Image 1 (spheres, one colour):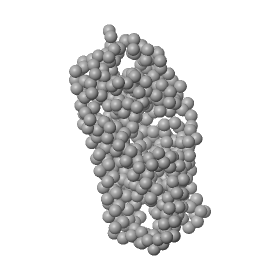
Image 2 (image 1 turned 120 degrees about the vertical axis):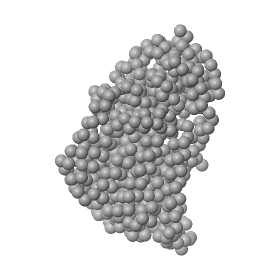
Image 3 (image 1 turned 60 degrees about the vertical axis):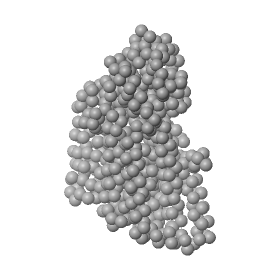
Image 4 (image 1 turned 90 degrees about the vertical axis):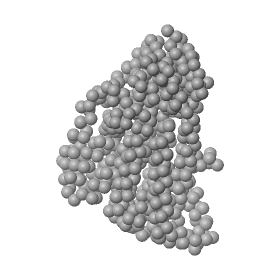
Amino acid sequence: MSFILGVLEDHLLTLFALVFLGVWIFSKFYRGLLNEVLELVSTKWAWIAACVVILLGLVRLGFYVSTLSFADHAEPTVTSVSWLWNTGHPIYHAQDSAERYSLLYGPLLSIYHGTFLKILGGSLFGAKLPGVLSGFLAMLFCYLIARRFVSWQKSVVLTAIIALVWGKFGATTFWARGDPHLILLVSIATYFQIALKSTRIKNICLGVCAALAVNIKIHSFIYFLPLIFLNGISVWIFVGALPALVLPFFSTGINISNYLEWIKAAGKHGLAIREFTQNFQIAVLGFLPSFLGAQNFRAFLKNNFALLLPVLIICVIACKPGAGFHHLLPFTPLFLFFFLKYADISRLKFHPRLTLTWVLVFFILAITTQTKIIFKFKKGAGDGREKEITEILDRYQGANTNIGYGDSAHYRDSFYAPLAIFRGNPDLVDASALMDMDLSHMPIPENTLQALRDCKIQNWILPKDNEPFSLKSFYTLEPLFSEEFRKIFFQNYEKRETSNHYEIWSCKK
């Protein structure tokens, strides 16, 4: 069953067709019941159910921030780099540097997360809190956007539907990466376009939000193009954007030349057709409510053209290996805004089967995705891994110690890598960053190999009963660490100690 659902998740329009067929057959045999369901949506029970969905969404945020691991392999990297920035290290090291940890994110992500870590101290809770906070505020702003058009009861229902849609995207809307902040910035910009009366202030706010987003992901100005298309180009957009765009680069530890070199290197990543088909299917489902609420296809195109083009551009950009359909998430508040501004909600009653199918599809996707996340977190949550690593780091205090990698099956055991970085240890090799570098055809440089020979890292904490550094890249499925790297490791390190989940390899010298 899980295999079938996994296949259908990759073929969303096929899933939609199957669910629609089920709804159509059901309605033929129980025609009156379908009408009763639609009538129920207009009653108080709809927003009571919506409140339950929103409450479950908030519980999901609390569950994530309280667990002792991360959902995605780039989260530990973002956390480590943010802490390194706090301690005066560069966010973007040189491409031939011994350290291999730089990512393609803009500097604001590390500055924002680093500020939280500086205030709260180095902890996994402090690493997760910024994303969770942005995810919560983004949901709040989506409610406020809806409230400008409809009653508070209907706004609650629409917010719950958004929470349901977000459920399909796993932890993306609140994890320790850039996506929650991008969704929040687009939500804020969209709300201000509706709520503010002064065109000048609207444009300044739009420029600020767009510039902040670009300093998280360089392509993020595209998310703001629909609002610019609607309002027109204004000099005040640039007045707001310029300081927000430039100021982060005056911070210590940010080398704009190195940053641009890493961005340039990402141009070698290529595109994947499979990713485009998934992105396109998500985009189609995103536009479907507005299409059903339009008088005709021509009216739909006219009203949504400002949104269609940027969405198509992101569908192409998100074809980069490792990108994916979650890059469409920042359009969520814009889908909501265009739907409420141009669509006739009452027309959805003329398409009851399609409307119900749309909701059921995202309900199925949310349930299956969130169930997988719960089981994913079940391993490593409460089994003492964080405490175990902390005790090991206490014993080896004063010696440079890193958390390394075993095979791909035990990759999650290495997600605790920031715990060593919080102790002031250097970050020699980060797997998430190395996968991006490998995709750019950048092998591990000689400086890194020499650092390994010199035992710059005196102790490695590795997953137990694993072949050290046998991890494979997500993108190429080839070994991430070269044979030369592993040969040097075995020549210079030996296993010294074993604990419940880890083993410690120390320098022979």
